[in-house]
Image (cartoon, rainbow, N blue to C red; front, side):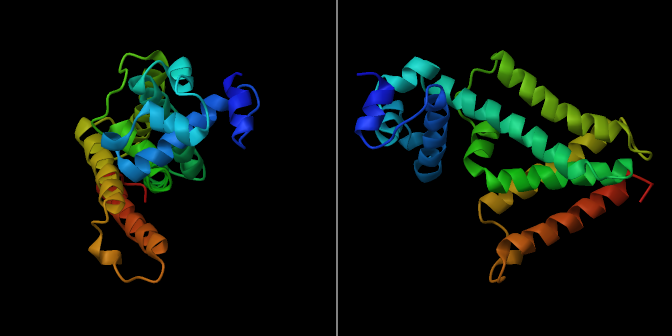
Length: 208
């Protein structure tokens, strides 16, 4: 009996090729609940309803699975930033859009975000991971270079990136006292993020 048959016997059937996606999805759920300390390939397989060997077959080991999650994370982050920045009519507006997409993606995909930037064992030399990470960084760098005020200045890029990344991390960790008690926490976080991004835009650009 192969893993597809095992899954079907356990009440979960997968099409060929779907199992990799299901294992990644299951791993993210497990990471959200337990963190990396409580994470194992065996538990991931048990929850997915497949044999203990299935994750190793697809990913090799825990590092391989986490690397796959981080790669998907950076790819998704790129799409989120590009979509949020698409309507930007000026370089400053585009940079704000990239920041907005960055923060929203982190809040919508906390497990991926923590794997991408946390102290997790990843195959840093993996070509797909490296390409996805470089593309995400390149979006920010290109937007920074286009700024009419301090375009190309590395310090302005560090400021913008640190601000959005720090904001996202504080929000994920529940360290946003400004939104405590708000009827719609997500909307309150959005308003704070927009205000911060506007300040960054005014500080770094001169076209808004």
